[in-house]
Length: 398
Image 1 (cartoon, rainbow, N blue to C red):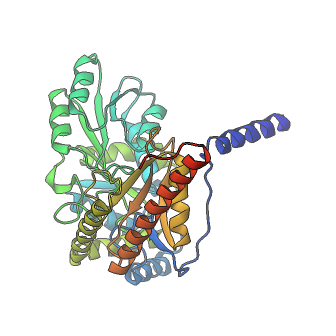
Image 2: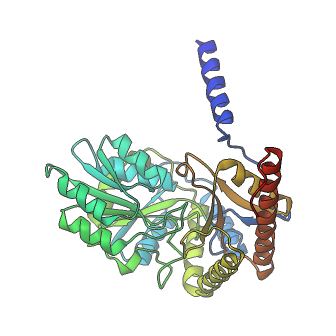
Image 3: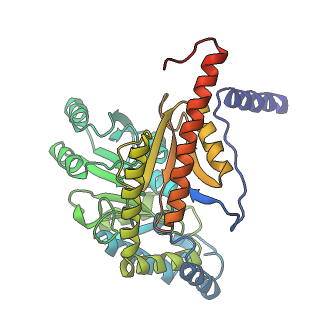
């Protein structure tokens, strides 16, 4: 039996390597001189010393860990305070903490859906949303990305024999574009469906108060189920679901990833409370981020880089194929710049890209270094193509 497993693991590893999809990790040391354009610390809060001190103080007061699940003895006053603050930020009556965004989506879909539920998802939704519907056994259809007419068609054709749930990201993590919440809400309402939005990449960044793509602008009547994460713009870790008290109580009773998981470390909750305080007190972080986005897009357009249509901190450069993406990422790494090299199956075939993310913590010098390096990548790429053509006896046209 062990030999069969060893063979299986070796075969899968070989297939992954052969396809050019092999993933690897590299351990970084803080202060190693790398300019990070790959992370999701959009407001620069992750390394703010005030969050670190709040986390340390929370650990000193409550302990390093919560010691039990929320429903046993792990739900502490700091968790309660954080849930109340997140509900207030998003304009909802209540919220519920989860240990990760993946768990929040799995738990919510598992608790809301079953074989009698019809789920309609945007094709580019995060993997956790797709997996959640599958694990729930729901009958799922996926509509074309951002295509309300296709969603309307699917809803109209579906038998009216049970509950319906429309699910979308608020900001799409690989493209950086934003969902049409108004359109999704109106379409869902016409067909008696609830709308669930995962606003992981919008929370803290978008909205007048950093309340996200959904937040207060789209209340509980339009978006009954709102998911947000704490490990991106808020700089800490974990996630939450916000909605009606009835919804939250339902999740407390039936969301298995919530019921059977040790509660979030109290120091992390304390750090997140500090992040929410800074989100309100320092709107200039969002102003700085918006300025960087405008500058980057303007300069990248001048360079002729293959920009995607994104007004968020996620700025993809779609290069097409995996070898080209990996070559650009390696050239950038040579200059001390970390970017996300995104390949299949995370994105569709032919859509491999550099996923560049901007942060309010980036300096003008950081941005200049990135743009200079990208221009160099473009020049090296063109040279590589010409040399390849010559080697194959196909001199490139002038």
